[in-house]
Image (tube, one colour):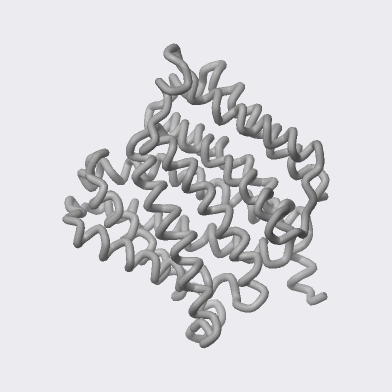
Length: 309
């Protein structure tokens, strides 16, 4: 075992790097909605939403490749046998996941989206159990899944019942995006044994971003109103992906899926708090219903992963 591998397996290191990732991902929820406002993109303008997402991820890919190349003092390029992995990962992790995410987020609140996104931990654990077969589904894990999904359901309940608080193109799309993310986590775990995670992240973002940019443009999408504030936000959002997914991929390469994803409970916490302060969603975030939902989600994720060590 190399010194680098030993360091990246230490719980304190995993915790620190994972927390950085979760904070960045949590900030993405309000940033996307702020971006819609700055670039004048309407909640029903699907083409422009896809174009906006494509621009973000194409830029994220470029930044990831540039930063990785500088740090390694050489131009990072996938090997000939890695391009099929880049293609599959770009479709699952970037195109499918974020088309669903961007459209869904335009039709729900940042608070709801951040909590629903926590479901990706349960899907990732399930995929690890049944596809990778490197973990087992025990009673505590199953109970954790039940508690977590109870939290997801609770945040969508209102005076008219569950259906009154959910829209398929809103909360439904966010939930589907988490399933796509779970499969991409398994792909990263598998593919990173053959190719460097930074290379996979950079080129799959670039490829997926270009596909989404082209699709959004030909669908009639437009991204306008480029100002210092809007461009700065776009660069920050690109860095969210470039930094967070590269670090997450490295952690998944050297650790079990469960050990890494246990820290995903911080995603809804950061997402809810940042949405509350940046989007003015305090009335939804700081209610008894919101707090109970967060507690259930966090308890569920903890129970699912507590035996990972």
